[in-house]
Length: 280
Image 1 (cartoon, helix red, strand yellow):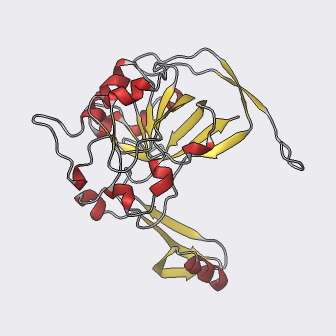
Image 2 (tube, rainbow, N blue to C red):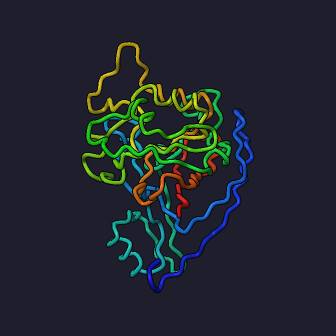
Image 3 (cartoon, rainbow, N blue to C red):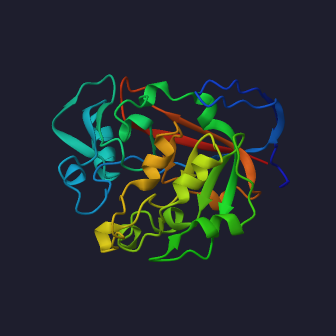
């Protein structure tokens, strides 16, 4: 411990009562943690979505300030690069902003309703599935234009099962978010990864790469291949997908507790999420 710094050790008794249709349950676990690590990308105006997809192009993210307390605050916000409304009011009382975002942009959670017509919505995700012990599947050799296969995951020797959220970690989002290569050279999950996770009955899956082939940069589908096969395999089993987590290198040990909290959007297909790691 560094001199002059105080570290508080929290003892958390985590009792997760399985509320999902597959009956996830966990024996109480005693956990010591000294750090809370933010695994979330910042939400800001004009976050870059999947290239070439109309839904992203036509619905850019916006964090728009519509009221500021003083002229000085207004100019500070402008200097910080905030989006200021043309009708911004300096009201002498409070700053107010408006958020508009496509719910699959940035760090987010997909609910079954995203791909399954009768799947449950994001506000009904059993929180015991997304607030749980997690384990890193470290794949640091996966660089630009690579893919993550079932073999890659199995070769790590990480046990997959109903009590732990697997977190696929290539380091890609942490190293390249906001840079041209983020989408242009992004690694992706090969078909079959979702089916593997579903067969292992994992409670959720987190990742720092795209969960399907990167067709926007010319990756071809095999004959008869369904592009969203990993989405379908997971969401059909009621397994939420926690996408584009970052800062995974800060966790250290492989095992930690993940808290991935979606907004409670009634009837929604997905939601931006604040994702945290509790680590020693």
